[in-house]
Picture 1 (tube, one colour):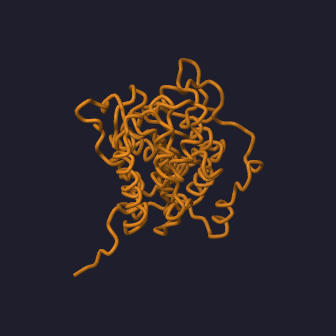
Picture 2 (cartoon, rainbow, N blue to C red):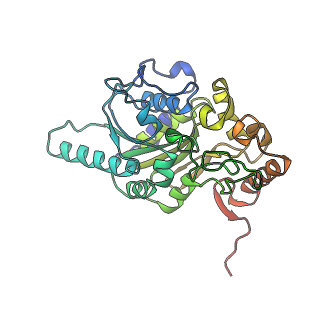
Picture 3 (cartoon, helix red, strand yellow):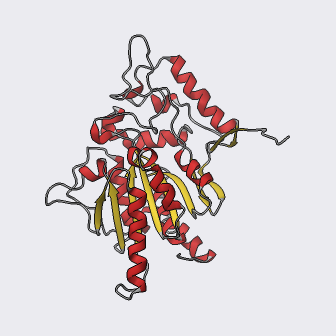
Length: 331
């Protein structure tokens, strides 16, 4: 397992302070067919830019597989392999095992090679959660990135465990009798994995565009720490969320500032908010109102979401992270 001392880790944390620090070389370039305004494409571009050329990536079936592997065309400038929908975790383990074995046998130079697996919310938070759990219990150097557009967008916007409460999808259309068909609160994936996997060295949530450079720095930190690591990013989707592509960055920023998607990192069990929404949150209406998937909301539904978000930050034992009410005491 890779080991990094405190000074080197702090250096990695502060790798990018301005956009001028970001390298110009691209490892996710032209050739993809993502939708206009796709934030997941930006996640791909940023994570591999932060990781650099000595990187192997595996990607589960999903938007970032279909859009990035047209016949004889790909945006990847690094070694990349497609894996099955629920196999993000197992592909990361397999890559880690192969690298370790080849280096041990002298068939590959003993050097740092980044092992990154990415998956969507269906492939990661739902179907692939077992494999990711196994990966986070391993001793291999690996980073799993869950790019979350809150639906199975690749197959026409079906609801997943990560879909926001009340959102319209092809599985949860609004009706005349029941206006809200998506009645599950969003799965708390990163916190669930952090609490259940103490072997994981680093677990974080992120947004590719807000705060600026935060996501790239988290990728750099995860790779520097080594061992099993995980990042969950929120990825606004113009097609699935029903808004003009020009507003993707604004929608992502509103998700963070409203507190509906908390940003934090857990490093060896220590939690740090990278955007503290405990104070000065914007109303969730400023987030919901930017998206057509919530166009059926009345003040009743908006107020309910606001109450739930307020509860997350004001009553949870770990605000925005651990859904156990404050005041829990042993008898």
